[in-house]
Image (cartoon, rainbow, N blue to C red; front, side, top):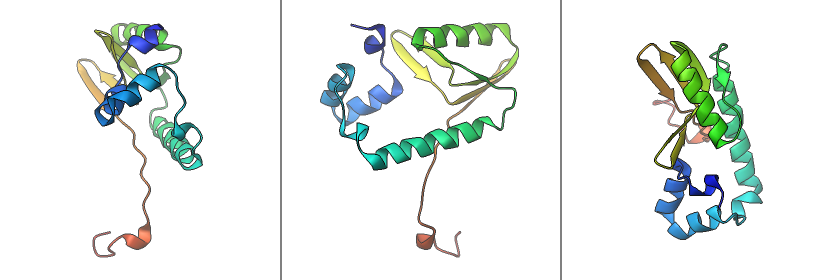
Length: 131
């Protein structure tokens, strides 16, 4: 079994809370209906675009790339080496649990974690008095 399959991510945890069997199927690599659902693909693409737009707020940010182990190592290296740094998609691992955040801003001993979310709505359903 791959190291990746042994890790438990936040997404895995949320999936298992909904249905434990879904996590088993995901870890075994089975396709889901979301893989072919055009609407779900459009929502995912929209979330990706919003995430990329958010990174534009931090021109000096560093994108953490690579597989899980490489991302964890690069994150650790930058967090230890730099007193001030902005990281996009940094990865942290502890006891076979993995966490990735959208944006991490480190200023000395202060750390801000920013999770970027996209949301769509129908403006015609918004109460004009409450905006």
